[in-house]
Image 1: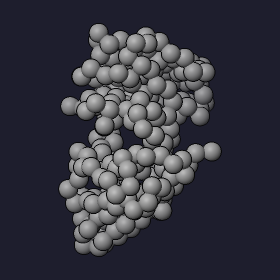
Image 2: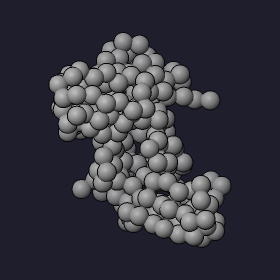
Image 3: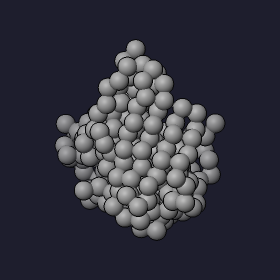
Image 4: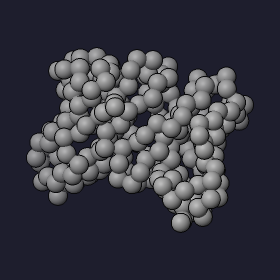
Amino acid sequence: SQQGEEDPQALSIQEGENATMNCSYKTSINNLQWYRQNSGRGLVHLILIRSNEREKHSGRLRVTLDTSKKSSSLLITASRAADTASYFCATPQDGGFKTIFGAGTRLFVKA
Amino acid sequence: DVKVTQSSRYLVKRTGEKVFLECVQDMDHENMFWYRQDPGLGLRLIYFSYDVKMKEKGDIPEGYSVSREKKERFSLILESASTNQTSMYLCASSSPLWGYNEQFFGPGTRLTVL
């Protein structure tokens, strides 16, 4: 299985609700990144959290990292229709020479 | 505004054709990457390059080659396209400290091989 695996695979919520996505990984990391991909487009970097950080905020995004459980979560508060996208976690591997992306969580926000 | 551009958004080729996918970045990044993205499989690394004329195989290099003659340009070559290479191809770049710094992605090329 992949280094980063997101859960759930798909999520459908109403505008204004919060969306939570989880990511699990297998090996030790020094950072974890989250990316967003709008339909049929490239990925856009959202946030990076380092292994010595437990929580990080950026606007309506909140990321947590639990290195003991090898897991991270991405919370989007007060979601908007424009947040509809796929979200990927990404972790470095091989000393940072590779970045491994999970299969992603597809988020659909209904207006 | 930082930018990674790819030569085509959509491409249709026939089996056996030689296919060139071009990627250009304007950020003076040392590192460049080619991924393919397939439903349910996420992004898989095909090749990467950490300097001009340098290249390293990723996880799925079979059937592909790359060229990096200039720092800003990274080309992916399908020597003889096959139907199982129908996919979305994404190019990305990053500065050194790769694995720590974000990757900047192009818009993708959706390739169909008939």
